[in-house]
Length: 134
Image 1 (cartoon, rainbow, N blue to C red):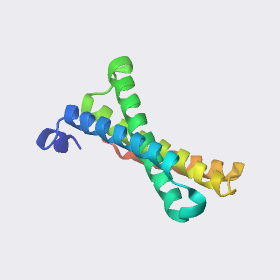
Image 2 (cartoon, helix red, strand yellow):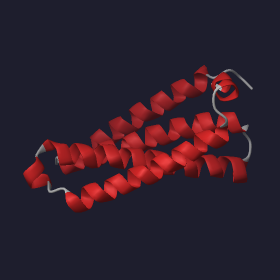
Image 3 (cartoon, rainbow, N blue to C red):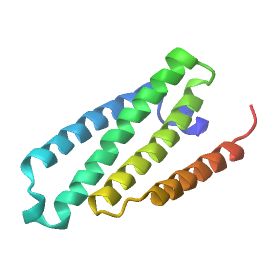
Image 4 (tube, helix red, strand yellow):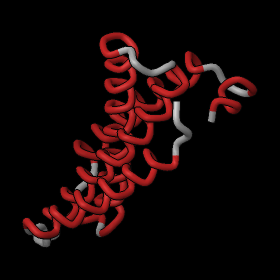
């Protein structure tokens, strides 16, 4: 991952594109909420809603996690902070959107949430253990 940033894109540009994409995703989500009628449109308004919400939450959580890590905690280098913030934002956004989708379809139970949290915790631990030691 460090080679990608060193060779193709600096973290500043990555953050800029993430910020622009997040603003676009929140705008698209707002348009879905205010302009589509789920009872008329069938499955597509729900799909637009959840995809836009996932992208908006992903960008927001990434930016918050990155700036928290770099500005306040500061134990990782910037490429490492980009990598971990992206991974954690993706996992947490998928947890929230999956839980909201299950709740929307009246399928959310406490053991579903426990299984989701256990699965995403396992995935995060796999990523952490496969990283080279510092």
